[in-house]
Length: 304
Length: 132
Image (cartoon, rainbow over all chains, first blue to last red; front, side, top):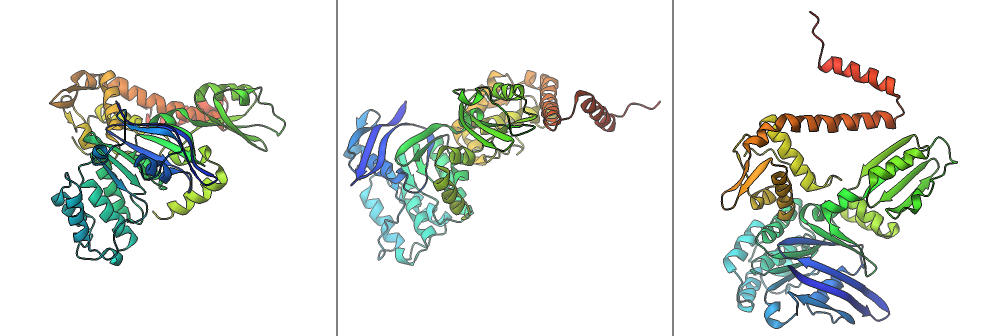
């Protein structure tokens, strides 16, 4: 059964189409990763899912029903920007959450704050970005929610705490809940997410099981004796998503049938033909416009 | 079960295939023995920090290939005949490695005879013929 269906979602801000016709199914008992360059529309999708933004068209349904107040109780959200009150201590925030949500587990929240080393006597303004993220994550995971929507839930965290957040997400999926998260750190998405969606400029450009995307998408590379070579229609094959030629080298991005295409490439006179695996970062970079994607990813990966 | 499983999520090889390969290898090497219990899907997914459905997919495939069996409520175990199959698994692992090596030899432009000569030389180093 799929918990959340997003159908043909459109959201405009003025003349900008932040989300431009996105359709997604987010299953239960799973971690779902949303990837995209800055400004791709990830946060807007999350806001529409939570009714914090009104879509211009399209629908979002939870188990076939639109979002309602009782459903809202079962969803926990960690926004990308801090929503903690600067003047309140973390202990006061904990108390506020306890009063706001019937299913909030104060004991669990306390444990999580301790694991993340968040000093609950401190006011929010005295905490670093990472500690604020950690506090929001701790409160979200103490909610006993069935759906967790996490926008950059590891922002500013050190590697140990980042891994801890991934473990918490995986634990929720193992308990049957749905986790939807976005991250610029592709390695985290690759590790924790079963299924991913890549959005770029408001549109869905790729969606699927991470393992299936890796199994199917390959680079077939061939090197020719000289620059005058013909591909005999290989580039027109429906399974060849992209062809890059530089001098004597041709690189084909294939979406299936890599071995067969490699054989055909050998048949055209290529001397060295290789089939190369792609990791999620490669898949991401091929899926989005390279200029935006490259700067985005490299800048964020340096954080690790 | 000994902590023998590791995955490299950044590799281009799907994680579920990495788990399958490692369980088979552990069985072939005797690190995992007949009747030995594997961690639960949930436990292994937490240990490896990978999605539980990915682990479940690997276990389903290992069941289908009759390497392990799962009894509801008890867990997953290495099948006795899973271990009996280990020579075949070892042959599969060897074949895959040789295939990769020969593909590479072809890719760098070596001919059949040159490749055979190299193979014989390497074979002699690792499996010396008895001098007596």
